[in-house]
Image (cartoon, rainbow, N blue to C red; front, side, top):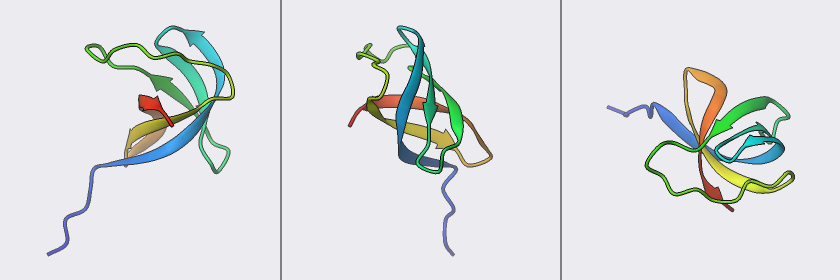
Length: 70
């Protein structure tokens, strides 16, 4: 039996930095999402136009956990 993942990872582009741990980002298809850095994860610089790795739940592509710069 094939196991279906509940999360996917992709690359997004930061569109607007909200604060040190939150931003609006664009997926490759142009959809805008809310990006966030989880508690316990070290901060990394958020710069508009930067590419970042994000992890999203397959049932809700409106937000993604930012994992780091590409």
